[in-house]
Length: 383
Ligand SMILES: *Cc1c(COP(=O)(O)O)cnc(C)c1O
Image (cartoon, rainbow, N blue to C red; front, side):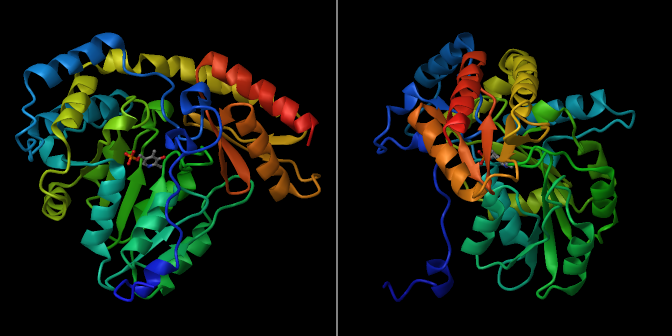
C-alpha cells in the first residue's frame, strides 16, 4: 500500500512480543499468570538493590541531561566479570579490558550492529541453524540481508556441519557471519566438540557470533578462545540471569578493533541513564543478584525428570533456564496437539512458548513449576 516502502519488508513476519507483556489479551491480568514464555528470571531484583536504584534515580540522575554515551564504568565492571568467569574454568588467563566490551540496548541491538557492520548492501549473507533464536533471522531480513539455514539433527539438535560447510563454500553473496547460540534457544543444547572444531576452523574473513545469553546457567563460556580468534564475538545480556529484562542492556566481548567498529555503528546515546545505573549496580552486586541460579538449576532437573516420566512427552536435557519438549511420535497430529496443549496451559494461567513444533518452558519459582507440571499432565490427559 505504501509505495515508498522496500518491497521485501512486506514479505516477512515481525517478532511477536511475548504474551506476558501484552495487556490487551482477554486472559487474566498478566501478573496473575505464570509467565514462563520469555526465559526471564522469575525474581525481581533483591529489594536492597532496588532501593539503591530508586535512591540513585532520585538523587543523581538528571533527567534533563543525555546519558553517559561512553559507558566506561559499566564496561570496566563487565570486563572484570568476564575475566572472573573465564578464568575460574581455565588455566589460560584472560585479561579483558573496557576496550574489549561494547554495550547495546539489549543484545538485539548488538546483533543488528554486527550485521550492519558486515553484510549490509549486498556484502554478505548470514548463516544460522534452525531451530534457534528467532531474532537472528528477523534482524537480518529487516536489513535486506540474505539468511541461510544450515538445519540441525532432529534428535540431538546438533548443527548439520556438512550442510553448514557447504553453505559457507557455495553461498553468494558469501557467508560473512555465522551465528550460534551456546546453549541454544529454544533447544537448550550447548555446542559440541565437533561444532566447536568447525567454528575454530572457519576462515578469519567470517565473523563467528557466539551468543552466551544463558551463560550464567550453563557456566560454560568460550571467552578464553577470543584471544586465539579475533574473528569471534561473544554476546551476553542482563535480561536473563541478571534479572534486568526491563532495562534492555546487553554486551559483547571481542577484539578491540571490532569493538571500535561497533562503537561507530551504534546510536550515540543508546542506553538510558537508568538502565546504565541498573546494570552497573547489578554487576557490582552480582553475588546477590545471581544467587537464585542454584535453585533454578535444581528446579530444572526436577522439571525434566518429572516430565520425562510421561510417555506422551519427549523432553530434552537443557543447559539453560528453560526446557524444550515435544509430543512423542504416536500422536495423530502432533502440530495441532501442541497448539491445543499451548492453549490449554494458557487457559490455566501457565504461559509458555509454542515454537518449532514443541513447547519451550521457562524454569520459574518452585510453585510455578509445580503448577506447570500439574497443568501439563492434566492437559495431556484431555488431549
Ligand atoms: C534472551 C536472549 C537474548 C537477549 O536479548 P536482549 O536483547 O539482550 O534482551 C539474546 N540471545 C538469546 C539467544 C536470547 O535467548
